[in-house]
Image 1: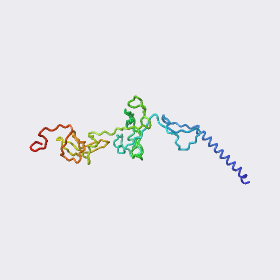
Image 2 (image 1 turned 90 degrees about the vertical axis):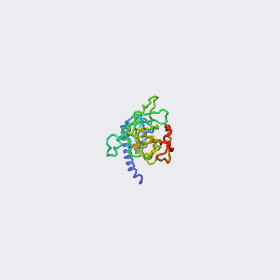
Image 3 (image 1 turned 45 degrees about the vertical axis):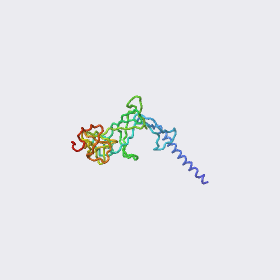
Image 4 (image 1 turned 30 degrees about the horizontal axis):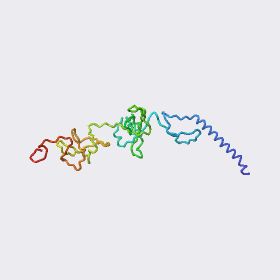
Length: 262
């Protein structure tokens, strides 16, 4: 009797819930008919997709899309290297707009691993918000707007997402500098110089930049200085040198023997 008396109320409640569900279904059907997903660029679907009638929860990743009109590369750069990039305009006070200093810098993208180099022209599109967690480097996003045009142009080869590439960004020009092999730089900022009489001189220099296997010397060397790149442990000033390719001194000169001129 208790169940029978409650049945009309349950039927009324179920009817109300059914009416609400039908209204929601009608609204969803109407919204779906009005919904259109449009990309703002020419694209190709890399992965993903949904089936007709499939339920999609809010925030779910539906697909991964590739922009076929341009290719974007993430280039990792040591934070100290930012100081060597050319900048346009004054440094802004707002950190969020600081990356605009580097936007538009020209970049040459080169495919690695090929016997014949392939190059594409790009520009710095934007700067990452902070250091990469894994590499602790700044991320520059380089955009190549013509990935189908390479140098050389024949045979044609497009720049595709996932390729291993090397990016070259021209830096600030340094004038009146001397570029030396890195092995020529000794400890404590010294280089060894061969004097005119083929004796060694320890010279203190100022280094403005170290890049790979090269050092850029700002001061301490003069035109015509012969810098020694051979390892000379425990070298001291005045050490007699044998310079490869040098013309030997005339007899009786610079021999160091008693009774001869030196």
